[in-house]
Image (cartoon, rainbow, N blue to C red; front, side, top):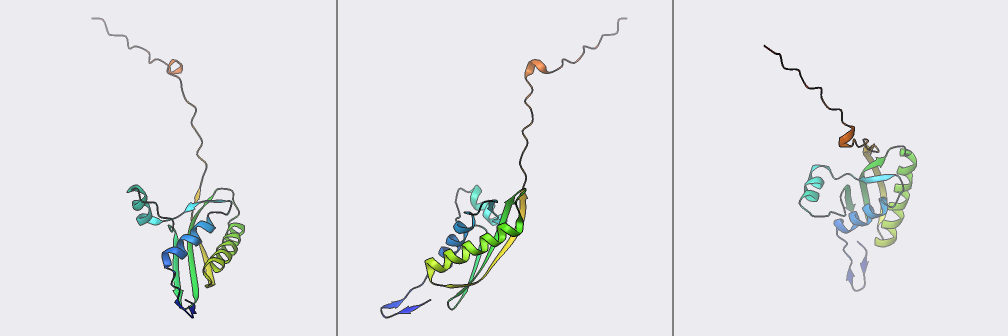
Length: 136
C-alpha cells in the first residue's frame, strides 16, 4: 500500500473483493456471482456475502482479481467478460490506488430461463373411470 507522510494506508482484501464484486454485477448479462459450497452455505445461514465469487491476491501495490460468475442464457460470454474486466479494473484502481494487473473471469454456469408450467384447474382434471365391480 502507498506510504504517506502521515503513515500507511491499508485496505483489507475483503474490501477490494467487495468493490470488485459490486462493479462486476453492474454489467448486463450476469445472473449472479458464484460462491461455491461455502457461499451457498453462508446464504442459507442468512449471511449476505458481498465478496462472494471474488478472490483477490495482493502483492505490494498490485492486485490480481479472479471473478467466478454465472451468466444469463443468450448472453455473449466474451463481450460480458471484457466489460467485466474493464469495469472492475477501472473501479478498483480508482477507489484504492492499487494497480490491477489481472482480472480473470471464470464462467461457472449459465442461468436458463424457467418456463412456468400451465396451471391445471381442478375441474379440468379428468376423473378416473370407476372400475366396475365384478358381480357374483
